Image (cartoon, rainbow, N blue to C red; front, side, top):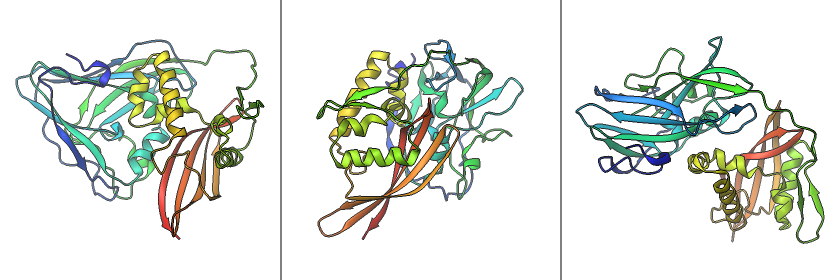
Length: 348
């Protein structure tokens, strides 16, 4: 019995050994730890989840990964909450060129921190499935024909020392001993359909009734506009340049639910996310109000950019410093925020 949309247990025989924490820091030597031998009778396959026509432009490409135990021995493996440490995809073009890893995958694998995982058990006759968005793992840019393979690391992916973008990617020479490899899946991505010119998205500021529209601002001005709007409690201006859909799709926990949801379900998730941002429980949330901020660095090339900002937050007898990095994408000439990360920098 397959795990329904990757969210529940795959039958009564699939036991969760418990929620554990592995301190996988970028300084741990070796790309992979010693891995247990994969027993005979373990079948790892992939297929498109709810297959449809895929277009160039950023819509999710959900792929279902299934581990089936057709043998006579119990199979145990670790599944990380952040799937970047359990799953890999190899995508090649029609001329056998390896597609580069996504910026999201590289960032998740090169940041120091703990990796939380569950140890799962698949008994003979049982199977387990998860659904992952292929675009979270590789830079699917442009149309064409592609060959897709998936890999599972039973003992988790472990970065090399001083992890870099290169060490975070899959190895063209093969995977660590013990990794599960799927068969090949043919993927066709069509060019984005041509649409007539349309006005930029509009919003109305509730307090004043003013019509708001996204302007073609450079990335640093987009971030300054957003932060100052939050300082003034101007919610509609704050949300104007936030792409909530992309933020949910890139969230390591919510992305799996987002990929499997219907259009109506995604709309509910967006509204719930908006409400959470307006009532932040996380002190590092993007919507927490700083007392002061300094834009330190702006980088952009093509359709992607980053803006680094030093934020100051007033405490009772100190000022807390946090460095926010905002990740932006440009569509139709307009930059919007699609993700962010936070690093605590101490106090002053």
